[in-house]
Length: 227
Image (cartoon, rainbow, N blue to C red; front, side, top):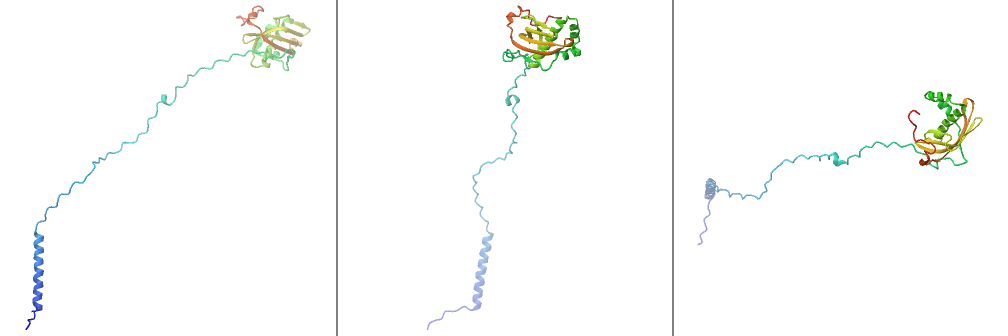
C-alpha cells in the first residue's frame, strides 16, 4: 500500500515563511554593519594650465610727427617787383597810321594842385618854348593812355631834327621819349589854342634807340639831382 506524502498544514507553512524572512533580515543587518571598502583613487585628468590675464587696453596709434606728415613748406620768397615793360615793335603804331587823341590831358594835369611848380615854370618861358613843353607833357600822357603799361617820364622834342612851329601847330618829327630808363623814337603833331592849351594831338611811337647812341644825342638815363 503506497504512502501518500505528508502535506504540511497551514500552521506549519506559516512558521516556515516567517523563519525564512527572519533569516533574510538578519543577513541584511549583518551586511549593512560591515565597513565599506575605500573607494579607489580617481586618476587625475589631463588638463592645460590656464592663467587668466586681463587684456591690455587698446591704445590708439600715436599721431605722426609733423615732419613725417608732410615735407617742410618752402620758404616764402617775397615777389620780385615787375619792372615797367618797354614797348616792342608790335606795340608801336604802324608808320603812316598815327594815334589820334580823342581826349586831351595836359590841361587837367597842369590844373592839379600838385603841378603848381610846373605851372610857375611854364609861365616864365617864352611862347615857343612854352608850347613845346606843353606838347611834350601831352605826349607823355597820350602814350600812357594808349598803353597803360607804359609810363613815360621825359620827352625831348628835337633829338633828331628841329621842331617846326606854324602858327599854333607844333610838328616834332625827330622827338625821343624815355620809358623805364629806355629811349624810343617818336613823332608827334600838337595843336594849341588860347593860353597855349593843347586842342589836338596825334603821335607815332617808334623803335628803341640803341644805347650806344644815347650819348651822341645827349639822352640821359636818369635826371640829374635838382632837375
